Length: 249
Image (cartoon, rainbow, N blue to C red; front, top):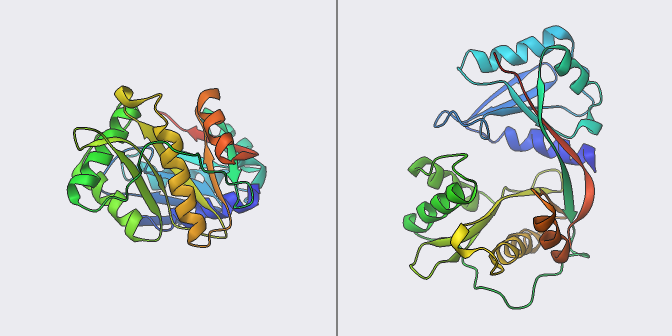
């Protein structure tokens, strides 16, 4: 599965507004933001970069004033991590990813109602809720809301639970399928609405929407044992590891 996930990572970055390919790597950039979570690179499966290849990658970030950063499945390109470490890259985190297929998919019974966003206000509310849920790792913005709309309208899925005040209690997203899989991401619930089944509801709704479109599998990363248990109840199972690295200075 690591190779498929890595092929997907490269294909998904090629959908970004600005794509730069250097030997062995694909860089996806979004000119609307400097967020490292939206401006990063990934290696091609099996890449075996030289020192010059790594510095060509670094230059693609430096010339845009961005921190060189990568996300990838290290087992799909075993030579990449050592080459990056030799150039001074350091580990941000290592995450296990989980995989769900239609045969294991078990949506929860009951739970809060889930909606598909329609209006600009819906998308703005979702972007704001996810910003809050992720402790301000990215700022809510009109461009963020526009990205969510493009994702929904471009073959992916965005689902949310509406808060009593009409805004967003929590949401989840998934980019469009590539190479037989898709990444479910951005699962977040505002603090005031946690513990009410929101994360399970939106995760299941997004995965179900992708399976209904014919996507063979959906994968995601989790942030702790609590969220892992939520995802496993829906039908996600351990499938591999993803590595995040960056270069400072």
